[in-house]
Every structure is written in C-alpha cells, then in structure tokens.
Image (cartoon, rainbow, N blue to C red; front, side, top):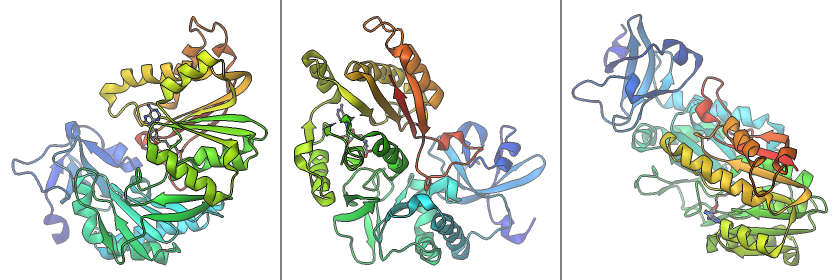
Amino acid sequence: MSPHEAQRPRLRLLKPLRASLMQGHPWLFDRALGLPAAPPAPGAVAVVEDHDGAIAQVFVDPDSPIRARVLTLDVDERLDDAWAHDRAQAAARRRSRDPALVGCDGLRALHGEADGCPGLVVDVYAGVAVAMFDGRAAAAFWTPRLPAVLRGLVAGGVDLDRTWVKGDRRGAPPYAIGPAPPEVVEIREDDARFGVDVISGQKTGFFLDQRDNRRCVAAHAAGAEVLNLFCYNGGFSLKAGLGGAARVTSVDSAPRAIESLADNLRRTGLPPEAHELVCADAFEFLAQARRQGRTWDLVIADPPSFAPSERTKGTALRGYARLVEACLDVVDAEGRFALASCSSHVTEQDLLGVLASAAIRPSAPGRGAALRVRYAGGAATDHPILPAFPEGRYLKFLLCDL
Ligand code: SAH
C-alpha cells in the first residue's frame, strides 16, 4: 500500500461488483458498500476494496442511497487540481471536435459521470458557465476543485469568462465566481436564439439535452400544424417554426415559461401570429381540444419527470399512458406524435410498452396499432453515456407516425 493510499478510509464491497466497476459503472449504492462506525464526511475520498484488494477511489455520500461515486480506478492517483484540470480539459476537447455543436454557443461542457467528474455538471451559455452539484457530497468534493475545472475547460477550448454556481439543489446557496452573470444570457442554436435565465430558470436554465431532438422536429415540421405540450421556453416551438411549420400551438402551465417563449420568438425573429401561446394544464388543454374536435399534424409531449424514484415507476407509467392516449386523440389521421421522457427510471422499452398498449384502448380501437417509431433519440451529443451505466441514459425521445 502506498503512503498516499494509506491516508484514505478503506470501504469494503458487500456485493461482487469489481467487474462492474472495472467496466466503468460509477456508482455504489448503500446496499453494496459498508461504512465504518464513524462514517467519512460527505465528499471525503475513500478507497473501495474487495477480498482481492483495492479497486477504486470514490467520494462518499453517507446520507444518500448513492453511497459512493467513482473518481478513478487508479488507487494511487492524486485527486488534486491538476487531475481535475485534466478531466475538464479532456471533456472540452471531445466537444471541440463535435460537428453537432457547430453553430451553438450553449453546450454542456461537462456531463458528470460520463466525463469522469461524478456529480458535477457545467453548462456554458455564451461565455457564462453554470455549475451544478448533484447533492451535498458532490458539492463538498468539487467546490475546492472548481477553479481548476474551469481552467481546464478553457484550456480545452471552451470560451467562458464568468461562472455562476447553482448550489447543490438541496439548499446550498448559489454564488458567482468572478463578476455576477446577467440574469438572462442569449444563446444561439443553429438559427434559433434563446434567452437563458441562468439564475432562476429550470435546471441550469435551458434544456440543452433536447438539441438533436429539436433538430429532428425542425426537419419534420414543414407545412405542419404543431402542438408542443410542456413547452417551457419553447425549444421545440421555435425549431418547428424555423422548420417551416404553418402554425405552432405551445402549452405550459407556468406563466414565466410562456413569457420567455414569447421573448424567444422575438429574439429569433419568428412571426408571433404563427404562434399560439397557451398557459394551461396540458391535460385540461387536451380534454378541451378533444371536445372541440381540434387536431394537429404533429403533437410533441415532453412532460416533467413523472418518476422521481424507482418506487413511483408504476404511477409514472400510468401517467404516460394517460398522456399518450390524450395526445393521440388530437393527432391527425396521418399525423405524427413525439413523446419524450426525462426520467432515468423509465426506459425506452417502458415507453414502447406504453405506446403499444395505447393500441388496444377501448376509445379508439386499432388506432394505436398503426403507430410506428420513425426516430428514437436521446440526449444531445454533449451529454454522453457510459456503456456500463444505463442509469445515465435518462432522456428518451420517440417520434412516431400514426
Ligand atoms: N419541452 C421543454 C422542457 C419541458 S420541462 C424543452 O424542450 O425545453 C417541463 C415543463 O412542463 C415545465 O416548463 C413546466 O412548467 C411544465 N409543466 C409541468 N406540469 C405541467 C402541466 N400539468 N401542464 C402543462 N405544463 C406543465
């Protein structure tokens, strides 16, 4: 054992997970990892071992079901600023050669586990980096290393001049590194312009992960009457408009979302008369549209996560089923329907199951049977997935023909 390794607590695997860790799975759940009587502080580095010896260095989160996140399989590696800098620089360099990011100045520069920086996300919006920690332990581990991470991103080619840290989603206060960012930062994505509220917007301010699915919608929108449900600040709506949609109806229950969509139409130079903005509950809107006999050529539904945990998955699937049925009621006979799910507990297979059962609902016999998936997408290319970590594939997007 090296002197460096000896300083760290050693935690014993309770399950045979050496192979899974070696393949790159970055999490150890509470059932799989014992803690000593005096557990390490959240974010403390420890060495995980089994009967064959040390396997990985992790940071520990004693209070979370995700008890440890793997930092490196090299048990002698020093997890200092140079290490953090190199991880970030490598992530940035991978993005600098990604053709899907050409024409975009909003990107996910660092995608947590998949970029070797578990529990840390850095989105960059036209020079403003927005960092977010996934929990208290990630905040404790990454906060002292964040300046090195940011320097690494710049060294790898990311253009950034200030940073806003959103805290840890469980109450840690946000703070600025360098000058405070403006509340709204304008980004461009192809021919669209979005004002991103980096301070109080959802997630880091924008749904960067839908970029490639937005492009898919743009490609299918020419001449179409489009309904975009759960539209937030109008990602799909703008791209549908730019793709030549005849008219776009956008629905969200949050007044601020509708306001920012109106603002984004102006920024992009799209004609407001071609966009109907509705602040309403999506299910109520669909029920009313059905009563009125309204239909659309292309209906998009990208709801918030219905399944915050594995335990709620059954309820979530019933929620998706109800949503799909209500959407299919308002899709034209030869129209298209796109469904997205951002819950990692609901798999693509689960969603296909929901679409398949829609075929046998009593209210529209045979209709769902004609559904065919034309495009199955996921999160955009700056949100990579580790092959050994299916939990990382949280976003699914299915575009279907009726
Ligand atoms: N499709 C968006 C992201 C959707 S986020 C994009 O591509 O950027 C989910 C959105 O659903 C939020 O804006 C939230 O305000 C809205 N929402 C949540 N519950 C809703 C409901 N019952 N009816 C309508 N909108 C709802």
